[in-house]
Length: 281
Ligand SMILES: [Zn+2]
Image (cartoon, rainbow, N blue to C red; front, side, top):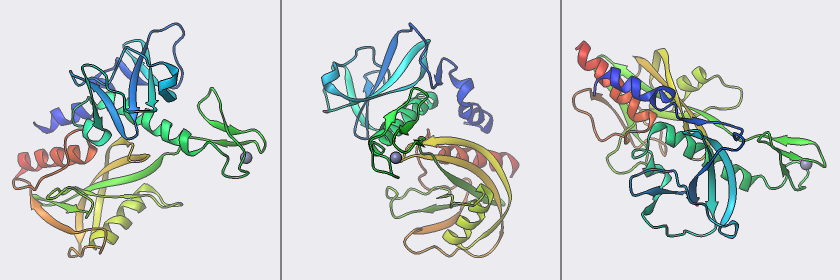
């Protein structure tokens, strides 16, 4: 796949404008459902996330509005039990991302994050009283007037280049053999650019320059927004941070290790940069 095709495939709203994130249901529209049980999502035999049939209320735990699908209102529903549904199967959320479209994954990501946020904010963190759901999409604690918004944690991911090589590293938590660009969460008070420089230096002891923002992806593991960058190597030898980075190396663009599956911004950054290097060298 060349870089142009990858760029197009990352453009979420061009890919399928008939699926879109939204905050408010359309009146009198039909409904479709995305079903969850813990961190699993229900797919049809044809690998579709949308189901027409609804469960009775006794089977469901939580219901959140996600957006529109072909003019229908789409709801994410958490089930109490892992129900077996004919012509459908359960799959881990992480594994679904390489099977379903990027727009469908965005809806799944929204639903999963809202469901988890509601579960974790039943009571006010300030006064301990029960919170209530407001139509505008937030939670309010009436006794102390505190408003709780869905939590989104910005994080960055950066692919560093040095000539025809890219820096890929592996964390001890990765599947065996898989390498990825460096990533990390923003600290309070920090800009995303500062975070990129700090994380890179902490994790591999390298200085970088020419930061260029490439795109973002909602990442429900558990509530991140991944901001993707390219950068160029400036100085320093690789020194891996103990406990965080198991191994980090410069890899030739035409001789890469196993990388994350498609459907993730990490894979997209690697494939796009490698296509650029291959056409330039
Ligand atoms: Zn309160």
